Image 1 (cartoon, one colour):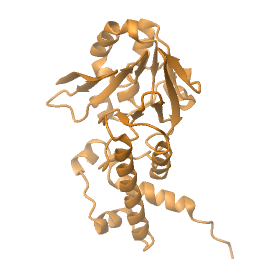
Image 2 (cartoon, one colour; image 1 turned 45 degrees about the vertical axis):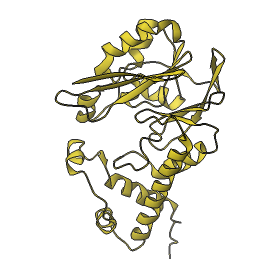
Image 3 (cartoon, one colour; image 1 turned 30 degrees about the vertical axis):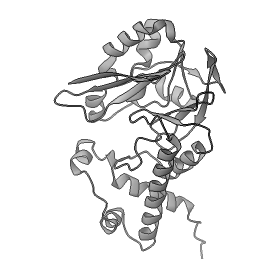
Image 4 (tube, one colour; image 1 turned 180 degrees about the vertical axis):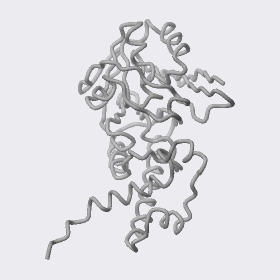
Length: 280
């Protein structure tokens, strides 16, 4: 099943994309056009639809801005650059990841498809076009390279996967909860109202949604820390806090996505903050 929906957010246009071999896709991704910029490029499985959209919008798109390297956001960057000669920008970390092929899990191949290698340009401190400025802000946690884009004149924040939801149920094995907490706090110092998330946009009171996500992660962190101080293992913490695991999702993703990964991320952070023991 394919999902292709166009969303009108006033000056911002969004294209919601999803693909599944059977039934409704488990997750859709939204790429946005704001002024002359296309933010993210969607999944490779929807390449035909994305290239057709870019063809129709060609006169309005001067550059592509990537929030991070994950294949549901960067999946069509190489194809767009090759076919239309549109420059693609990302952080240095994003560029180093996308310049060559990288391994992904079978479920990622199935849901989104692999991103083709592409050489992208490094982000300047600000990009401007049509009187609109886009300011990149490094927000690691979901991935090391994660970057959001603030448009101060309009009060927009293109947040990639920083938000997702105020109460997330899954965590990738490589996510760092302490970095996410710091990034959410950093974003709350910015001036914006509309939160253009890569999956769940919130046009009003964007800071309220970020605040709720921050509170949720801080509550999880504190609760896990309290149990870990008793010497509990991650599964024991899960049981003590009555955190539910989507076992089918964890199995399909080979453990790369799970609630337990969030618990383990807290415990790794606590271990890193622990002072080294003195030798006797």
